[in-house]
Image 1 (cartoon, rainbow, N blue to C red):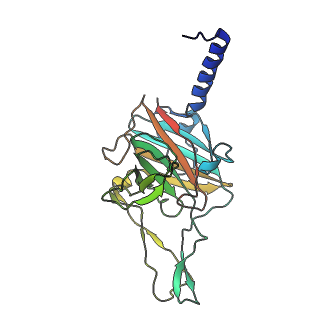
Image 2 (image 1 turned 120 degrees about the vertical axis):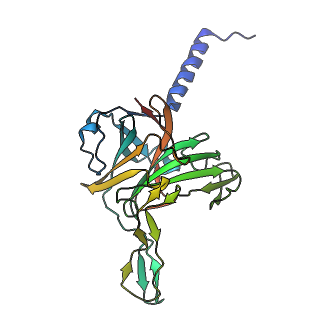
Image 3 (image 1 turned 30 degrees about the vertical axis):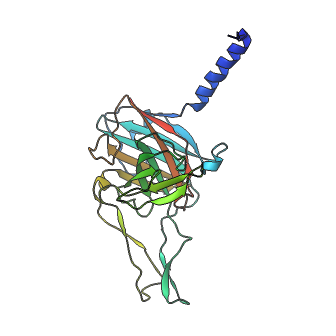
Length: 288
């Protein structure tokens, strides 16, 4: 066996340690508090004062090496429920989402693609390995909480789960993509069981007004209604708060446990939807 010189051995060890540290995901620590904050989108409750802020860099996936944006995260829990606080800069408040606009030349309504709501989401590991890159080609399931400025800002978040599979997902609508290695990957993003926060409206056949909403809020129920949320825009930034029981007992929800590490990620949608959002790398949630 060839003997490795001590100096070289030391350098290899240091490189391994540095590589391990570089790969370590940032941690969001949630202290236990006596009283949880009110979910009002203000972020000024005393409970947040004792929570350590984690500032996370975000961008489109291809630019995460040198991201241009950031979002502030805090979390607290009381042993029964967990709350999250997100704040990020946004110069313009967008609260409309694809409203119908009457086109005189066509004599019909069409969605205005230039009007989209601001939104944010938290995605937690549910089943399988967790990688925030949707095209990583990893078979997994995520628990996703989505706040939307128009469709999910009346007190309840849009609660969904993402399914990533190398074969077509049965029982739900799925779409085929190519992953980073040009192999088939199927994605499904169904809402949790129950009634979600809004419903889509069909456009009238005749002109009723120059512009009409495409979506109408409704009372959510079931597993789709177990995440509270509220967002407020002020002073050029959004403040959004979430709250959910640690364990809902639902199969489509991640169960949180104090002392256990949970992989998650955050995404911000600045008047965009689908793949045009800014994302973080993998983060770790720890409940004290």
